[in-house]
Picture 1 (cartoon, rainbow, N blue to C red):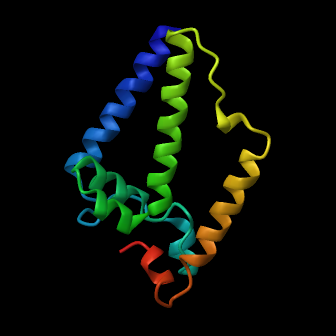
Picture 2: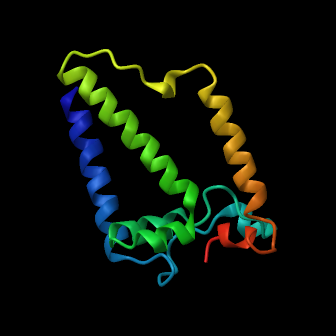
Picture 3: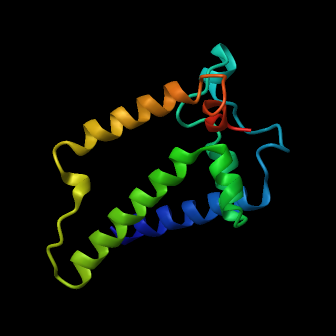
Length: 131
């Protein structure tokens, strides 16, 4: 059971090192978003590879320029992991709002709104498109 967690940690560290040293804007061997390649529209995840590179190089503003929703999702993931860790380690029962019944619907609506807005080619909406 513990070997699974070690393998996951090694994989995450490996990917982190890869994106730390390789800027997706400067290399041509990383996959392009299939939706953007075929339709020209940005999906909610477009720019996440570049945002990861920027974030790992401590350029938060650059990461925000690539995909603001990606950073929000990392904050939500951090909230979940920290709260789960606190509940597990300290035997607490803090309520995790990620498990609220309406949370998936709220997240879905936010993703769809972000998806639509980032494809409007006019200011200020074009700021949501990756650079």
